[in-house]
Image 1: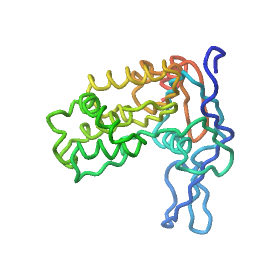
Image 2 (image 1 turned 90 degrees about the horizontal axis):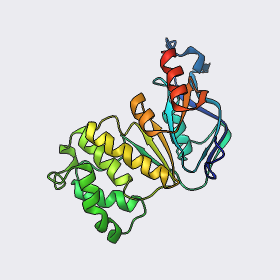
Image 3 (image 1 turned 90 degrees about the vertical axis):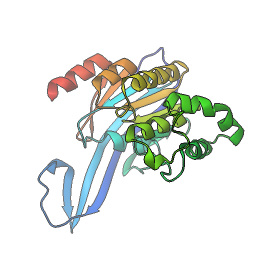
Image 4 (image 1 turned 180 degrees about the vertical axis):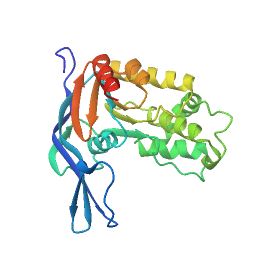
Length: 245
């Protein structure tokens, strides 16, 4: 987007994502433009020809109304969804952090830190070295021995975020993970994302909080009904999006 940024890390080229689901025979009452009827199958055209280039040192906010395609875009960049048309290139494996990232509720927070670290490719020794930092960032020192099923949603999400941020990622996708924390945790999380950006990483942040977007991001993408509506300066894009609501 700007000449002073680093090399490209993610290239999204004419990306189309389509879902097929069985219909119940009822006519859709909303989002009719997204639906095509085919022999009892509903085809949802979730993303329609989205293209952009992300670079090192960018923190990119992704905004849009519910169902606009934001999370679908993140899952496609992470490789969880195959394009119907177009392509996605990434310079390294993107790490997707969402509020629904799977940990195991019946296990303690301590065990989940270990499993989460192993899933990120860390060795047991590396996890042990970072354990206190992970637990401290999540503010769960008093609860880390309890099963995660006893955690509130906010506690679980803080632990997920802390585990994910315990190692450096060249490309990080954060999907609504900051929405459930308290003010203090959101501030810490946003500071960590800014630090990662300054270390020449690339961060995508999906959020309904325009304050988080403006405080954290140096670029914003607006997705509207599966299309790239606007891409540019955070204040300009957020102002246009807010005015359209």
